Image (tube, rainbow, N blue to C red; front, side):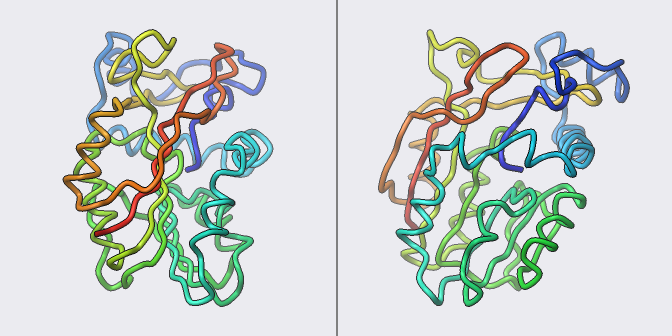
Length: 250
């Protein structure tokens, strides 16, 4: 998962499709609440699975991200690097890395993982929730990405701890969060329920201070930060802004 192209979930032209899926979850989202973690992950898995085949056309993430991911990888990936791509989607970010680079990708959607395997057959691609620890048998990594996928994270300190534990000392991580900022439309509240064409899901937004505390608590050292565009919600003509964090395991 590389972001949340809400327009794809509501129909390519922004016209909502007939509602289907879990009516209780939809009612909760409309009331301003959040769905349970299990329901959230099931919803994310369903939605991204349904749009997997059209994802690259619907969401040209590398262009919208202003090449931030590419610049990070160019700077930190050495020939012997081991790269973890959390929420990898179809493997857009790592498919261009050299054949000597070991890539491990995770996602909730088997359809996305199938595309990633096709794009980089030499990678290792796993269905895995970042709310759970990274399995130790996968080894440790020199570089990690979590781009766009933490939009659905309900416990940022826990997840960053899992990612930190997966890194070697000195390992580098680039991650994004939807950043909560008073006065920035669509970014004022800590949660934002979204009604897709199917299940309801909840976006989680973290303030700069909350993210900084989570980074420190996970044993990560901030190296660079930017507040910059993440993705565009076409149905509301609104750009959603990320906090872009480049951090290092102590």
